[in-house]
Length: 412
Picture 1 (cartoon, rainbow, N blue to C red):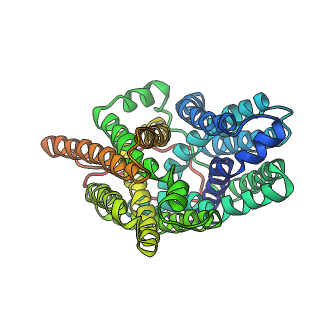
Picture 2 (picture 1 turned 90 degrees about the horizontal axis):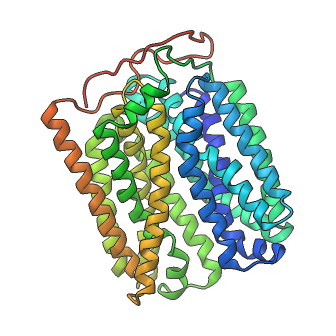
């Protein structure tokens, strides 16, 4: 694996830290800015809205910009956004910072970064390269978010965003030094990217992400409450439980790469089916503390194992214009986050108990699995299969290319 993937992983670490740290800093933000915690919670939704809108928008605007330069511009926007958040004079300014400068570049960076990662390696290692970039996101949940939350609790929430800004500068330096020049195909343009996004298999892949991944957040959004209300642990244990979920995510990302390279659709079917089983099992194991902790790790693993095959599937089906589809997949993930949290919360509000989100999540994931199976049957009917994103030798830093035509390879 080339060192350029390390630069992408460092960037993903910074993005993942700023995305999830707000959940642990809501009381500090509310107290400092003179608002309520529920109102401060809108900052989480604001970020998600920024991702949903920014992923396709910024990708479209940068469709003719060389890939490395676009990655640097997106990370620069991220860095400035976190600095603006740290200096925000009021709640409205903080919301604007979260939407415009933190959320907007998130999906575009991951979408473009996944395409670049795939072009850095041989065809048979593309999924591993994408999974390596995503490792930065999982490590952020294990180390970045707890450390940043602790920092914010002791030195103030503004200090957290200043540190994340510093991570952004480090990521920019790594991108500039390690990522090779990646050209834009002369034949590619916004029109071609939009047409690729409208292909039925791409749309089915995005729908699979929306429903399949929603099952994860139907439970994750209420995991803290389950820890204290059902498992019987104290508030101080919540951080440990979330870290265990993050450990599972990391394991899932490590396993997903080689499995997806070997067999994309079977990995997708298997991870979604395993997620359904884990969610249903959690409904019962949550009452036995040690079994509950084991299940949390398993949930993190099988939940995040779905992301790499979903990402690769959408990129593959977009064929020679995968960037907009790749970025839109992160819009789909954030719709899944919001939809899963809403559905799980609706079950709790209806009086069905704190364990009800597990079954709601399982139902959502079953819908995603059905959509994936239908898409697979359609593929089998056409004989198309799941092609590679890029064929040919990988890009290198020593020999930057001036032009390359992306030609999908056959196989599944």
